[in-house]
Length: 435
Figure 1: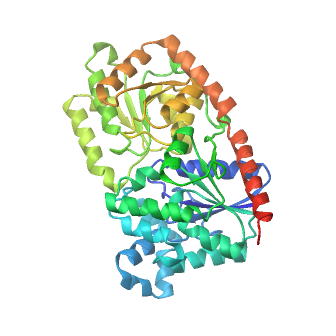
Figure 2: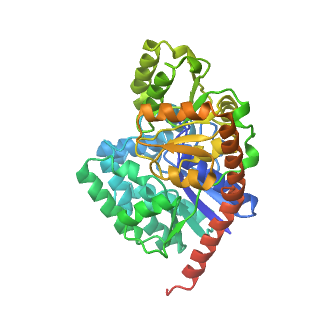
Figure 3: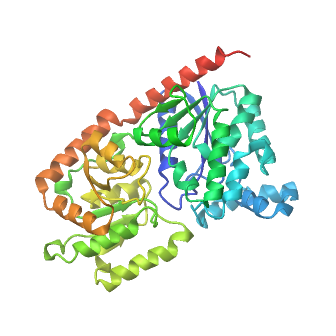
């Protein structure tokens, strides 16, 4: 089976769970003998992206932004457009990536959803033409619902079914001005009719999207995320340094300040003097001021020397991070559709301490590898962390349960096989549909 997977790239400046999700599936589907072609959009997926010369980056972030912001750029000579979308230019843009906020990008989001009727019609034509000339896909997989503007042209010109993953679109759309948010959800609803199936990453998010979109139960599948536990070195938390870890984009939305305030509260207890806070996950330029504020609070509390900003959150750097932390907490303000870092922490033997929000209770209930607390404020988090870190027997049991759950319930091999079943079902229906 040939699978086209269209994935927006983050450029590697911060921990991108959606990027890691897609790459995990892509790798495992290849291991199962299928041809999976990764088609990147906007930016490279990661800093060390090595295969950009094989497949171009479509909708290059630089020219995309310029053309939307200033329509005069729509008539740029092709040679300038090629420079803006070149590998060196996109790598530079990745290093300067400034925002993951929806505010200010409402018009661009709507234009992308309009597809061939939007200002990026030429880019859409380039992508579909390239796929038609270089590939013979059996199915096309869109990374998220904000890409639904691509679906009509892909199905119309390539005559293949289109599948779309669903994960945290609400975080982007609901942060827009209410007027725009309403219009964007209406567009997503309209474009959803052009997709053959949707795959939500949790029961919680399935419920969210059933409320947001008019999707039939037949069209909406639930498939939890997966990782390969063999890629993570397991060590029980009871045998690790008693440190607290944070791994995600270091931002206000992900609740870094809640964890910092909880750590300041925890540091007031004399018995916690050996505990350190290890932070990783990168950030955008938008987050710089926020991070400076967290440093200031820690400095004023006299404990900045007990906080480590672990710079490398990929590959070996991520492994080293998990070796340093007994527990992991990412107190996302509004919860998440899943949180891939939960599985990475559990596979590494670090129980998770999460707010009772979003899909966190669902994943922790299935895994038995952590605890939840509520409400999501620093005092409650500090208490939860303190009680867990000083209970070695419980730490060991949560570590053991978490690792076993990743192997039994969240193994990427099993999840990729389920993904293939969805592909085959959709392909079969497409082949037998009228016309």
